[in-house]
Image 1 (cartoon, rainbow, N blue to C red):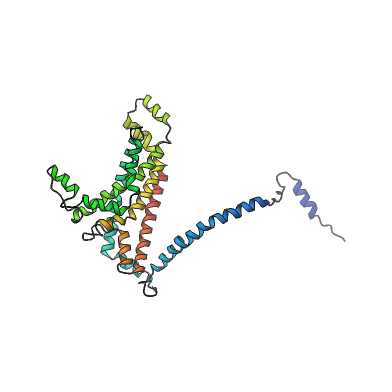
Image 2: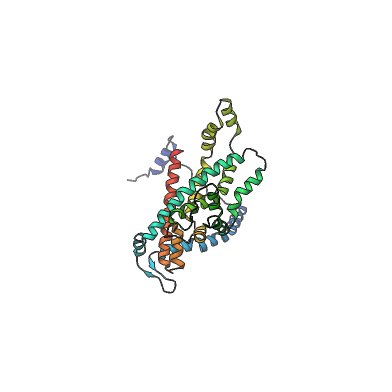
Length: 319
């Protein structure tokens, strides 16, 4: 008795039934020689940047994380000590004070400079006379060396012949030892930081203002909206993307403040102006404790990452 294999017939029958046909095999996309050359040229052109980022960013970051778990003093080989640096760091009252000072500095410099910058940007976007001069004047501190700016402010804050005390005495108010008194040292540094950060924020806001459709303001004017109402109902909402960008770069810049602290107060008096970056510098280049400095750098990075993620989350929820 012979048997007949019906499988091919069944397959053909199944393929003839509507809805059961198998999809034709995908044809592999062929890449032309010109496209291959363009891709090779692209990789060739970005290779220097990739090497630069790898050598001067990626490798140092990995080394920082590694050294944060070691006892490393430059002149001796790194010794693995696990989390001892982190335990010591968060039990150090000076470092904890530096965290508080950094947060307090950021809390005041960022919103104050942003508020002043947006008001200045709106005013300079009205077609005033000498508009270019005013823009340059506000932006000049941003491109001037921080050390030079700090030297000027050292003269302004001088308790004996400084400009600020002279102005206060002229109106009958007593002068202060601005950078020597622990009560006034941090507010003085905050004033310098907020003033210096206005320029770049102003330019970003001006660029964002020029992209707002003027018909929105014309319609609001026809509806009887005042200039203040137009500012809060049109300008502020339309500036939200720029505001988020300015907010993030301002926080990063505030957490990384170092030059003006080094020149103005050297972290004093009584650690009243010691910031996290200054503690990293002190641990690394004064005490030669590179392992501790690496741990402090990792903590600074964690703070920045946390604040950025929270800000992004809040922005997404508002959108």
